[in-house]
Amino acid sequence: MLKWSRQLDYGKPAPRFALRDTQGELRRLEEFDAPALLVAFICNHCPVVLHMLDGLCEFARDYAGRGLQIVAISANDPAEFAEDDYPHMQAFARDHALPFPYLHDESQDVALAYNAICTPDFFLYGPNRTLFYAGQFDSSRPRLPHPPVPGAPVQRTDLPVTGEDMRAAVDALLAGRPAPQLQVPSAGCSIKWRPGKDPWWG
Image (cartoon, rainbow, N blue to C red; front, side, top):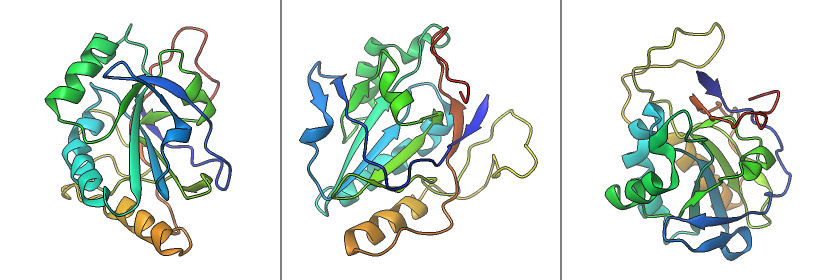
């Protein structure tokens, strides 16, 4: 089911996490010390993630020396999509040569703390680690089987993946300018919650 990011918590601190990456190392929020930090909730199977993944990796490489760090997190329950389990995450990170850590939120507690709802869902934080931007990567969308929802962002475009919106947000943050307005919500597959774990807004 297609979901749109909730875009909550502007100005609030990034929730802490301690999650295992695909190398088996425990990674914590505190170790990411660049002026800008992008927390991206993704997964292995989502067609929206796969559509923009090369663009996200290119963006990460472009900004690696300019003050931005990226950490990706998968919180999906693999009971619905087996390819979202941890061994598949390890293969996914290797096969796509991800230029950022890919963390496993097995308990889903971190996704809940961030109010994440879809993949991809983006949370950009400044030097003080308060939420600066929670919008889309750009306006490109893959072809999806879901019917459009009145008033919601488009689900399909013929635009290339450029990261235009995210690049503008990071540029503004690093230059000390206000966050872009209006921030268009990200759209993607719903996070697959465990039975009894799914929030009312999930």
